[in-house]
Image (tube, rainbow, N blue to C red):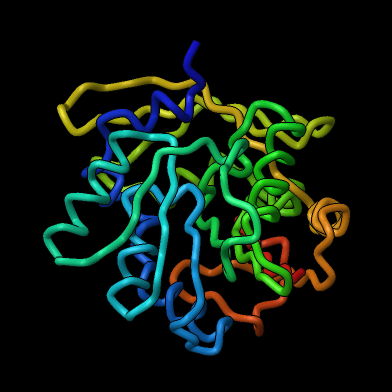
Length: 253
């Protein structure tokens, strides 16, 4: 049986590119470039690359990027866009819980909930982090964003999602946040690229900073920094706050 995140991304490449949360690509890539000191000799893997927006922007700037995703629809859209721009990016279909790469990349990015933390169990989410860690060389760096568990303790997830939705974008309803598991369960309604309306029972895991730190330490990361993640404006100056819906995690081996 398909999980909600698999159904969500079927035939959803074009609509996905119009969602609000995809609008910060250029600024997010500015931050990534700074984090790797503009070193174009480095190899980058984009895990859960979706329609390839970060991979394409980084490739445009001269970086060597491999994009992986579970969705054929998203990957096809990424390849279409890459071809139109005459770029050379390898896009591969892989499950982030089972990647074939070992010590191959200098940087792994996993942005905008690209796989982690969408899995149905904590163990599966951990497998994504473990596989991301294994793709990296010694001294490699992992940059990812994930849902901030401090946010729902102080705010309504339902109200936040409603406030950031425009006509034609995904609509979220029936949210319940479970304090025992730190999971938000909601019904997401989307219209795919063919105009078919889908209702999906979604289940996403929110993490508190101490959990993320512990998980990454257990995977051999020596330096772990966590900040607030502002759309299109990632910065080490943004101390994580309860107002941040997402957090930005930077970990070095």
